[in-house]
Image (cartoon, rainbow, N blue to C red; front, side, top):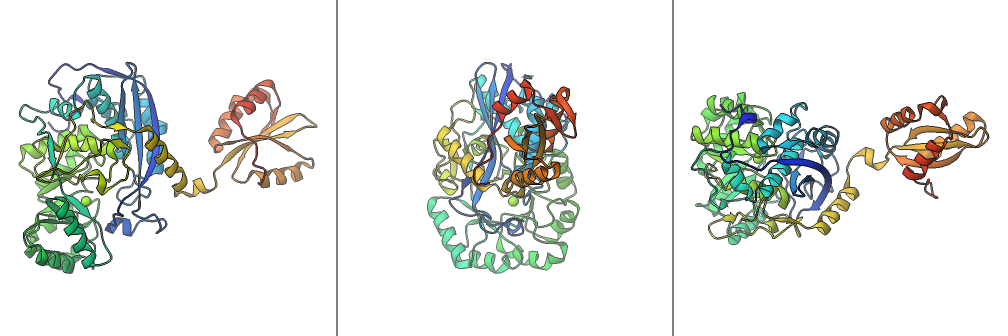
Length: 497
Ligand code: MG
């Protein structure tokens, strides 16, 4: 019953939406505070930006009725938390997911996974697209997103209007610094503290924190930093009255967690290992975990999230909503989900000032009395994307793309042999050098008609497009069609190159 999400029943008649356009906005935002975890510690890439920048793809979805839905794919810059990163998520969304949804009339967002099933894996990319559909559907039906989630659950699961929240504290340089941050968070009103740990930054830290704060609700998150060989270390944490220990063993493991949990009094919570409701069933039924951390983006979206929710409710498994440092777009939707009554433990959804200044959206989320955040009651995600901030974040992304392909992009070039009046369409990462080499090779000077950002696939597409004018070996007659294409689509080679 938990695997038939495509047929998930919605309790009320919904006005369908037809998707007319999807725009992708890759963004990066400076984080107010770095979040160092055991997995970001080991991530590839430069140290400078490690944990300092938050990246995401913001999905802007338009319907034929003029409704705009927003979704977030919270992919990281590096494949550190999950195998997806900004590069893979942009590729998969752009090339496959958008085309699967454009033009479709959608009766309920739980039909979206069926539209995307031709693409395997890539849960975060799928979650972003699905989230935009959920927001658009809620707005088209003039209801808050939390109510739309509840409409897909049995009676008795209406939103509470708020979510219980806690705060997550990354790996610091010293225990004293950690204690200072804990005090700051407690003063702000957070009722549950989570500390990131890794080998060497665990027992001493947690013991000291427990000495200073004997009564706080405290949990640890290892982000997969341990193995079964570390059981003795993990057992030392057992006396500290922890709410749970999260994902101690490998990120893709359930079996060994099933060996670990019986040796600990502390409850094990799984995060990274849970990608589907099937993983949830396996983890719970083999005794590998007693608590589930649900991150909607990790499990490919809210449809799968609803199945996991229903399973946990039916089996009395404590459930909470984790975070991937989402911007206001993703956080608003996670908050709506976290307000459902089957989410029984405090969630990693903090107030806006913990993450960004400013966020992409308005109004900001604030912490209220009792360590809760209230869910906005406006339709959909209930917050507005501020266009200027989206633009600033898009520029920040362009200035911080960490991939080699962005350092030296490919260009398709159009070289003119004026004597024969023919054009060569090729591609290179170093167009001036290529021009010199080819001029020498052909024994005559060539001039540059224009360059266009693009790789060998664009070159192949253009060579096919102008096949009628081909004279051989990537050369083409300089026809009006070729001339028009160059005029419209290309730029001049920069002077200094
Ligand atoms: Mg975690």
